[in-house]
Length: 159
Image (cartoon, rainbow, N blue to C red; front, side, top):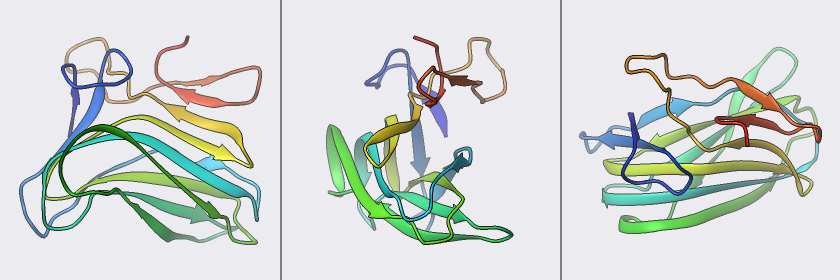
C-alpha cells in the first residue's frame, strides 16, 4: 500500500493497494467515527482498478457497540477488471445499538486506487478523507483530523 502521486482525483495523491496473491486481500483500516443508531449511512468513494480478476475489491464496514465490534457488511466495488476513476456509492441503515463505525479499504488481487472517501449520516457529511500523503519522505502514514464548524471530521489537508 502506498500513496500514488500520478493517479489521483484530489490533489496531490490517492491510496494505491497492490495485492499479488489471488487469495489475498490487502487492507487499510481508517479511524473510528461516532454514529447514531438506526441512521441511514451512505459511503461514497472514487475508485480505479487494474487487473482485479478473482473477486472485487471492497470497502468493509465495521460497527462498534458498547463493548464489542463486528463487521456488518462489505461494500463490493464493481466492476472487476480495469476501469478508470469512477464513483462508487452505497447506502445502508445502521443497527439499533451502533455507536461508532470504521471502514477498511480492501484491495483484491490486482491494483486498486481509492480517493475522496466520504461518509454521510442521514444526508449530512460526517467524515471525509482525500488521502493526502505525508510531506516528508519516510514520515508516518497518518493525517490529523480537521474538525470544521459543521462538525465534519476530515483527514488530509485543510481547505
